[in-house]
Length: 47
Image (cartoon, rainbow, N blue to C red):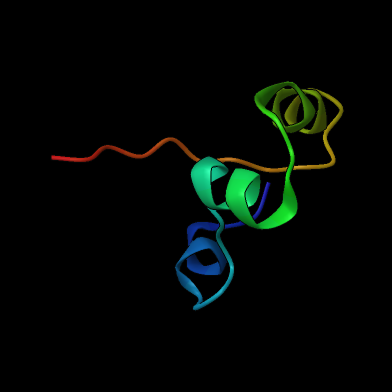
């Protein structure tokens, strides 16, 4: 998995909501990508 510095680079991250809107993917596509190791994720919190 990428180091935390990679996640902070501008344009390096894409939220699931944005991916769904811009690329027309669904939640199952994202989950499958994470489970197969083709997508990386980091959990975030919104306060």
